[in-house]
Image (cartoon, rainbow, N blue to C red; front, side, top):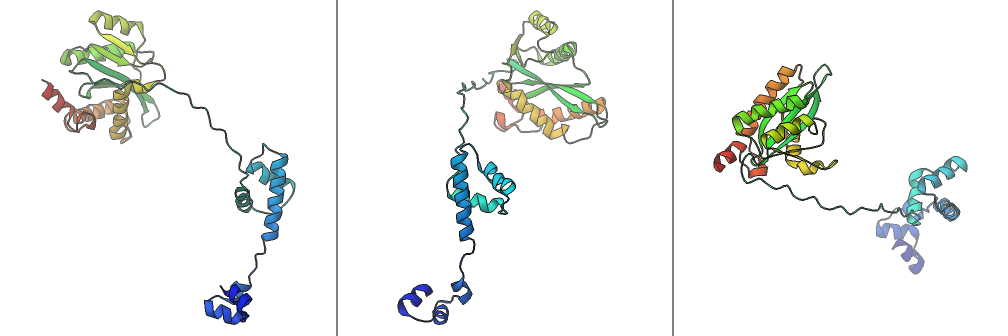
Length: 266
């Protein structure tokens, strides 16, 4: 407005600036970098025409390190974007994958159990393992076995102890770990009339109930303590398991505890 008043009305710059509240310094300011910006633009256009596969990174490094121009990357990038010289990045081809079927919720206890291993370390750095067993019907933790090594024989022994007080399941869902594809486990299951259901390799979502349970185990007690001995780890597991089954509401079964759902099914 001050410029229009000076040009059209012939008033002085001082009067126009006072009338519109503009400082004379601001009025008289002229961009000093315009010529340089035009030079940068010309160089960028020339580079991208000659080097069609070069993106901004290569163009800037060429101007700075090869040609020796002092401009910083923010200034050059601003002009690069204003000229719309950005390389179009070809999107990765996405493979269409079949959506995995939702896990069926068993209609009664002991229809389907899930098993999986976890790993952690003691305070002195020694690695130990956990075997988790879950009833898919009410998400009840049936047992947590802790030791440095849990071979197939130890898995069978743990399952036998659970079956003594809970009864045997129809199916046990497992991944493809060496303990689960062991001939001894398969012979044991066949003898008891239990089906061992292996998920597909690399598809842990097919065993989602136990995977979600594993996360709860790690978050609620495994990551809360520095554990020094296997006995200490087993004690923590036993105490937490009782709390999980009897005191902790489970959103996956409607906000009640596994013990409550088991009682409702009786």
